[in-house]
Length: 511
Image (cartoon, rainbow, N blue to C red; front, side, top):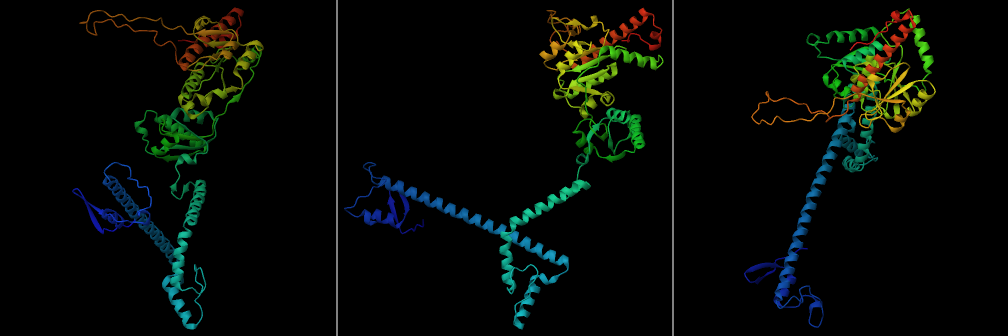
């Protein structure tokens, strides 16, 4: 709405700008046909009281606000249009410069604007249309019109060219992943791993010694100074084993090692290895067959006992989902001489590098077994195969582990960190064992406010924590059961007067 200042109306001490319509209204004359005498028209200010000027002032203020809004929108649209034109011109210039640069790179100057202008002029003098130049969209079109046509085509083909460029980048990246680099630069070493990243000095050294994994490459910290490390001998052993096995050793930065180990303590060593797999074991062998096999093996070795108890003790894990706890349990089982470790692979932590690191490399040497249904496997071993199944559980109905006598193949079952044994697993156990905890105590104050901390009697409040970590409980229970099995085997051999007792070295485990 365009308003013109044709007059003014004085209302009180305020001076307002009015339009021609308002000027005629203020003068008292008719403005339109509908407002002439004898015609009815509803006015928005009618019926507002005895003051007729009140509605006119409100309407004038509303019209002035509408006019300001329209002007604001017009200025905003103008600015947007200018910005849009500037961006379009910039894209057009960039595409034109890029086109001319490609032509110059090919060494063909006939496609430049000045060359096409001269060719077209020569063609007009000869009376025939100009030559068809590379990149032209029509035959015989003047170069300036061709240039304008190129500029119009730039806007139409802009999106298509962006898509083509994106496809080219994707193709270069796909090809670069095979060679170790992309258009943006070389890939990080983590993206070139063929297996999983095994980190830490002890897990790496154990994996190279056990030879259960396929080793692809070894990554060592490039800034490692062996003169300042206490484990320099172990690092040298890792390098020697890699060299003997023909494994490539790559020196790299700490940042690359952090990426491969996910910021876990790698100690400057990372190994690219194949993952470990569970071994399937849904049924235990018969207990008498196991004992016969162990006896024949001991006889075949000529009495050269290695301190291992004759009666085997297995470990069964029920829903150990924390990889740190699983690694610590495997470490205790390996060091204390457990015959094997069984778990349900569906509800147990996977055999990852975190488990191997927590086990200090014991996972690399000890084979872990999995079953589909742990309660069914335990029931079959207890009822049909002659095994003793002991569940670790506190509370009434459980027996102190120090009072348990192991005289046949035994399976020790441990539950999850938070809830212990499941109901079905507990029912599959033939007996429950526990670890006796220290009795609960209550702290009593001395009543002397002036007493110093040195003079006060220190009283430790016990009973606030009533359970052990599953890995700690595993170590205590396994040590007690294996020690009992060793004592029972030595006593049986001494009672029968068998000469193999001394040769097998059957004696109680110390401390």
